[in-house]
Length: 428
Image (tube, rainbow, N blue to C red; front, side, top):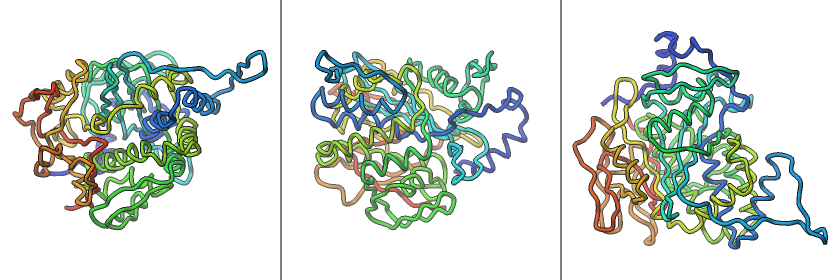
């Protein structure tokens, strides 16, 4: 099975393929990329504060950097801090990131503004499960008619790679496309810059990741040795961006590699050390929110605090990172419809999901995982399956366990936040 094309090959092909998108013009975003990790971390960071009043103050303080605001005071001149409860019901937040570098000259001339990272955070109505879905950048989807930020609208397109949506019609177009694909309502969204990842990894004091072998990727500047590495700053960014250095060199490998980092980030944020340190909590939340371009619906103190309260008590085993079900299709991938339907139906029905497949081509189980952790690719009662790669759709049908959880087919990849995994170096 051949790997997905390189960025250069893909862009060369898109240019030679004709003006299916170019005829509408490539729109330059006011704040082009921001890496996806930020919004998830921003919400989880605030979750770490123990009491409602302190949590509300943390969000109030963090949000003050987003825009000018007027502080309310009581009759004695004391600042009034809002008391915020958990958001009612289920909610979805889309996080999009382009590869533009946000205009920072340190990243060179990045060219087009493509959302090479697209994730959807779904929290169930009972606030017992959270699912983060990663959409492969090279997945072919239909793009609906999207509003032109300069006025008017763009025509719908029946088949384009999903990472074109940000340059095609901005964040609104990415949201509309994912809504059409999933059938889920997405009222909240944000875009994150490269520099936001650096600031957030610094704020949390670094994220520990396991690497199964030395990785040296000249394309991103990543240079890590086998074993445990605590990544922050530019190395954290390089780790999340690397594609050539992990798995089979494809974006699918990069997704599972990112999930190694994200699961460790969640464990780090929810650890007693981080949660008991208000400086870290505030610093992480501020670093995220000041580097995120939020939708108007999300640019609100109460909304962020309510999301944080809803996420606070979700068990690590019930926070699932999953790759949107897909299979190879020409120079990209296409959705695997049956598996995707099983995933999305479970989310809509508030049923937890169980991953029966492996963690993906860019990661593997950590042989030194602590006894309290869950083996990658399975539960404590279920051994991890053999490592595999996406190919053609399988005939595995989703099943429902006695606990009410939906078992996804074995060709759907991902892991929980409680699974300890290692990044797998690139192999031909």
